[in-house]
Image 1 (cartoon, helix red, strand yellow):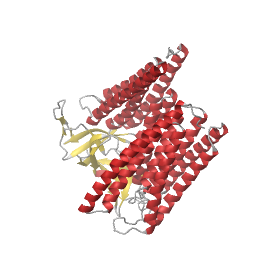
Image 2 (cartoon, one colour; image 1 turned 135 degrees about the horizontal axis):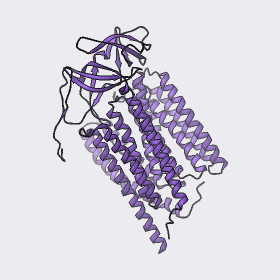
Image 3 (cartoon, chains in turn purple, orange; image 1 turned 30 degrees about the vertical axis):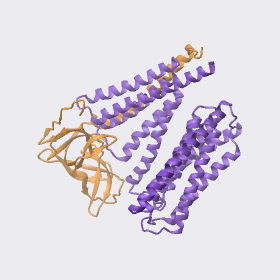
Image 4 (cartoon, each protein chain N blue to C red; image 1 turned 135 degrees about the vertical axis):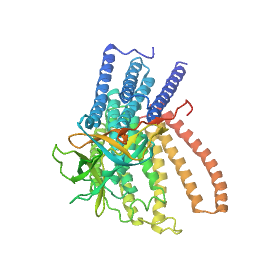
Length: 390
Length: 183
C-alpha cells in the first residue's frame, strides 16, 4: 500500500514537473514572440531590464522551490531562467541592430549555451543541461555553416557528419567521466551520445545524401580544418579521460569501449568511402553498384545501430534511450516508405505502393508499439530489481 | 515524512550558488552589452547613403537589410576576402559621408574611418560589410525607404552602430499599424 502511494506520489510529482516545464517553455515562447514583434512602445533600456528581471526572478524562484523540496517545479523555473537568459542575449543583439549573419547568430548561441551549461553544473540541474545541449547542437551546426559562408568554402554533408561524430565521441567521454563520479548528468550525456549516433546514421541512410557527402571538387578550407582539429582534440581528450576513469573504477567494461571504438572506426570508414560515389546523380535512373551497395550497407548498419542503442538503453535501465531508438526506427520506416514511393514513380505505382505501404505501416506500427511496450516493461523490471548495470 | 526540509547550511549553499550564477550570467550580459554599445560612446557621427531591401529573420524578427553606398568600393592592392578593411570617409556639401580611400591598415585617429570586412572581390571593386547592415523594427511598420540615409556612431577603432534612420536630413518617424489582441 505504502509502495503504491509512493509510486502515485512520484508520478504526480513527475507530472507536475512536466506541466511546469511546459509552462516555462510557453512563457519563454511568449517572450520570444514579443521580441520578434519588437515592442516598439517600450524603450530599449526597459526591454533589457524586463528580461533581466524575468531571468533573475526565474532563477531565484527556481532555487526557492528547490529549497522547499519542489525539485521538479524548481527545475522548470531554472529552465525558464535559462531560456530568458538566451532571449536576453538575442534581444540585446536586436536592440543594437547587430548583423544577422550566421557567425553572429552562432556567437550569440555560444554565449548562451556556455552560460546555461555553467548554471546547470552549479545547480546540478538536469533540465538546464538539456537546454544547454540543445543550444549546443544548434550552435555547432550553425558554426560550420558560418565558416562555409565566411571563408567561401565548399559545403559538405560529410564534414557535418564528421562534426556530429566528433561530438558523439566527446559526449561518450563525458558520459563515462560523470559515471565514474556517480554524477546524475551521466544519464543525460548517455542519451545525447545515442542521439548523435542515431542522427548521423540516419543522415547516412539517405541515397540522395551519400553522393553529396563529398561534392565533386570539394576543397576543405584551412579554417574549417582548424575548427575540426580543435573540437577533435577536445573530444578525444574527454573520451580518454572519461574512459580511463570509468574503467579504473570498474564502471565500464573493456568490451563496451571496444564496441564504441569499432563503431567510430566504421563510421570514419563509411564517411571516407562515400568519396567514391562523389557527385553521382540518384535521379538519372540507374544507380552505380557502388552507391547501391553503400546505401544498402548504411541502412543495414542503421538497423544494427538502432538495435545496439536499444540494447544499450536496456543495459543502463534507460527507457528514454529505448524510446529514442524506437522513434528513429519509426522514422526509418517512414523515410524508406517515401523513398520507395519515389523510386516506383507513376500514379498506379504510387497508388499500389500507398496501399501496400499503408498496410505494412499499420502492421509495423502495431508491431513497433508492442515491441516498445515489451522493451520498456523489461527495462523497468530490471530497474525495479536493482539490476547491476556495470 | 518523505521530504526532509533542507537544513539551513544547505539553504545558504543554494543561495550562494544563486548569487554566483546571477553574477556570472549578468556579467556575461553586461560585458556583451558594453561591447555592442561601445561605438555609441564614440564622438564621431557620420551619415551614410543607402539602398535598402526588406527581409524577415525567423530567429531575430523583422528588419531591413541596408545596402550602403560604401558597401562597394574600388579594389585595393593585396586585399582578399575575409580581410579587415578601414574605409576613410569624407563629408560632402550635404553632410553625407562618402568614400575617400581604403586601407588594410588602421588610419590615424584624426581621420573619420569605418571598419569593415571584405565579403567578395571582383576585378575592379570589392564588397564590404560593416556590421550595420540590419535595422530592426516591429511588424506592420510603415516608413519611407527612398533616399534614406543612416546616422551612424563610430568608435576610435572604426566600429559602427546605427543611431537612426534619416530622410532629407531629418529622422524618419516609423508609424505602426494599430494592433488588437487578435492581430
